[in-house]
Amino acid sequence: MHEISLCQSLIDKVQQIAVTHGALSVGLVTLRIGPLSGVDPLLMQHAYPFAAAGSLAAESKLLIELSPLRVRCEGCCSETEVEPSFLICSVCGSHHTELVSGDEMTLMSVELVTRGEVGHV
Amino acid sequence: MCDTCGCNITPGNLRFAYKPLNGTTAVAVLKNLLARNDDQATHNRYHFDQHRILTINLMSSPGSGKTALLEATIDALHHEYRIGVIEGDLDTENDAMRIRAKGVPAHQIITGSACHLDAHMVHDALHQFPLSGLDILFIENVGNLVCPASFDLGQHRNVVLLSVTEGDDKPSKYPVIFRAADLVLFTKSDLLPVLDDFSPERAEENLRNLASSAPVIQLSARHALGLQPWLDWLRGQLVIQRSQVDQGESIRPRIQHDGAHFPEVSI
Image 1 (cartoon, rainbow over the protein chains, first blue to last red):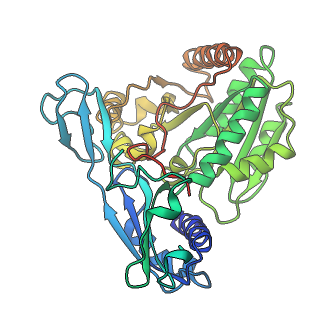
Image 2 (image 1 turned 45 degrees about the vertical axis):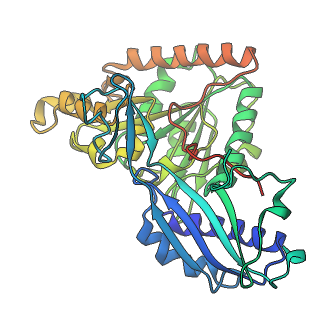
């Protein structure tokens, strides 16, 4: 539902980075998205070209890395992979866990097409 | 600090950090997609703290009784606290009119097609909604169990309502929003005797399976049942918020969507 507005703020940021670096265009944009981020990767892919149109990222590709959902148990200290609706410790069953990864929606990197000279970066 | 993930890059050394390869340059960013919203939310929270206000973000599906809860809360607390309400809906001023009928200032944000409030919408509303003199500000989010959970508004606490007509598996179906709750209210509890498929115990178990320690309160706003624990919780949160503000601090929701598993590089 809100993937379009997320894509628009993503493109704003990418555009800002491209302009700062004097890039000609953007090649690849890499995101990392977790199952508890509230973001649907497929909808994000669909929304991306619409948000990117007219920007330096118009011809860019969006790569989404899915981060695993992992919790650390405060009781037995195990770190385990879990399901979104079941965030308890898979080893001892404790409800007292802390999320280690899985709620990210992070812009990881942007690949810029430059003039190929150090001075322009 | 390491040489692989970008955490060693600072604004000062950024221009030395990347070597162009075949005309392309990779720039590590590590920035939350909602960074702009979160910056605005921090600004909103600063405003609330300046006015020593407790701000509560009410989230739930449509029709679970957020406005009815506010009406009952205003009836119970209007002699004790000065309350303000910001309403979010796709259309109509209906909810704000219901609140104003109780003699409490209310501002309606009409989101058009947007399925959630964001920090910028709330900030715009604050320009038309004087905070001075208020003790508690409620922000009634758009009825939706998905999108509102992702957007920090600058609130101090998240309260999620689950009406007993909705089904006790809602916390399992919508883990993102229920995980973000600092308090969960099972509303319309007067209907429990005629609903044999909603078990409060099962609903709470599904909430605990999200590793949530949020307290749960059962209440019926229409029949004024079980309101006391909710009112006491509000009073307690206001006391905590005020004591934090007096020390130059502020309270924040238990779960922050900040992608804090990565170090941030500012570019």
